[in-house]
Image (cartoon, rainbow, N blue to C red; front, side, top):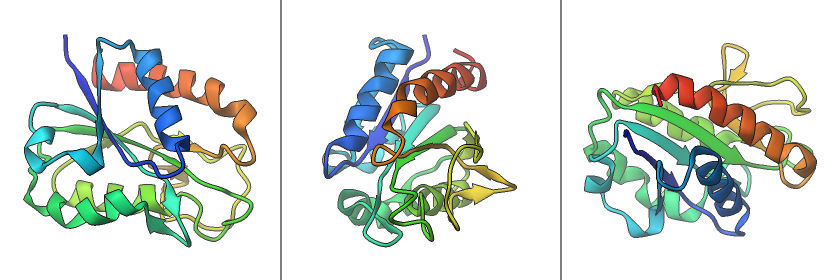
Length: 169
């Protein structure tokens, strides 16, 4: 069976909580979790299906562990890899840069050959701008635990079902 590698950073624990929900929805035996603070570039090599998870921190910035790892992405060949993204953020408090970290990572990894999968509708969200929106959709799953935590489980289930098809699992 094809394994999925989830590479995530989490400062407050919200992103890690959603990562664990995604793993449970896929099945524990399908998904390996990797905290970006503890990986090196070679850890990406064993997967053709990846999920990159990062909260947007401060005002449109990468979470600190991802910020530290970001320059190392240049030495990874993402060619032939399907990459899905998800982020946590606050669409009300940070309406002008909601999910920017997800967009920053997607742009960089796509430049390095990764094929983006898992696009997600912007319907049901209330924000002004986001670097994570391309062609009217988020480049991945947008989670807002601050304002829409009641929708997280439903969104995770729908997104994982979509990814299973896109990953061919």
